[in-house]
Amino acid sequence: MASSSWQPDWPVPARVQAHFYSRAGGVSVAPYAGFNLATHVGDDSAAVRSNRQSLASELSTVAGFQWLQQVHSNRVVRVDSAGDVLTADGLVTQQTRLGCCILTADCLPLFFASRDGAEVGVAHAGWRGMAGGIIENLLAQMQSPPAEICVWLGPAIGPCHFEVGEDVCLSFAAVLPDEVIDECFKPAAQNGKYYADLYQLARRKLHALGVAEISGGAVCTVCDTEHCYSYRRDGQTGRNLSLIYIDP
Ligand SMILES: [Zn+2]
Figure 1: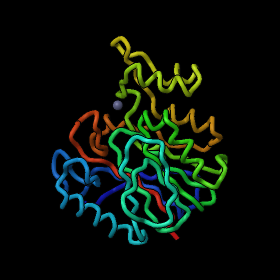
Figure 2: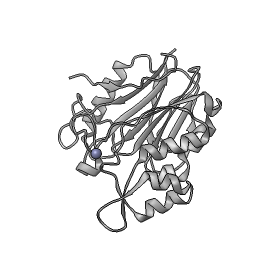
Figure 3: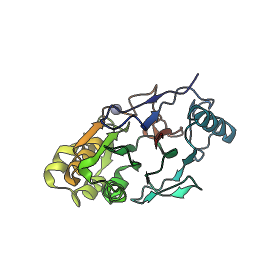
């Protein structure tokens, strides 16, 4: 079975190619079945290599893929060509044919593109990275002003499943107004636990930074067993690929 992806419906030129790859297809076997692109999760390395090769042959216009070692940081790197794995949680490029890659299983993948299609970016945002400023740092690496940037929120753990402790709530309370905290953290049954809305936290941050064109944010990776890997649901599992590039 061939791989398949979800793509945003956003007002940017068609040369901007943004894809969230479903776990369908691929050759990985349980508990990583099937289109796992991550080398660090214990999957058979030959299977991951095969999945990455089929990705590369499907996307023949992509000259190179930039992969990251993601560490829940706020570090964003601007790249001009694909190179060795970088330790960071976001990528920006103005170059064509350069595939910027993020791997997730519950964390939020954010896709960025300027309205003129001249530059793109992608970020991995769990709660730690988002509270720490990954969105701010990604926008700072782009040359276009925020008003000219469109954002798509790829699949992440939804407020139906993202139960967190007081520490997470307090991290955001340090950087966001009380009204946003009340909106994005709903008390859970257990004392000191909350259901957090990563999507709404991202929207509120983006709005505050001047980004108005925001789409996506309607999927829960824990609920969607067919398309999404979920660390919260399965523990040992694969990672979905979020990829963006500019097609010449
Ligand atoms: Zn859910």
